[in-house]
Image (tube, rainbow, N blue to C red; front, top):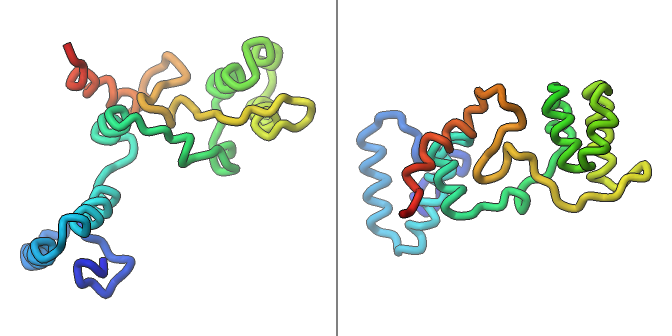
Length: 166
């Protein structure tokens, strides 16, 4: 924001407020900057405008081979949002193996989630799993069920043909 002469550190570059004068002002500032500084501003604009789970993010993530595991780890908020038994059991199979998942298929989501956490932390006699990323967070994003309706995976399915090379 300082590169654009804005005193508001928490402001936005790509606010989309329809103020043509403000947009012209940003453009004038960009013209006065070196290429490296313009790229820094472009990074901010991209961060402001790219919507997680969108077709653009899926295209970029796949093209750039983004490894979300470098940037994200499951936390309490992630586990608090798990409420689907089928999904939890599929995650348990990924982390603990099919035998563990099958042995706990009738357990409540809360119990299965606890076992997943035990594997990730290496607690309660479970072998620690160092790296794990839910299918939702990978590129390409994948669903845990065949029910459909997982928007992010659907977005990739729509744009994937654009990136297939013959």
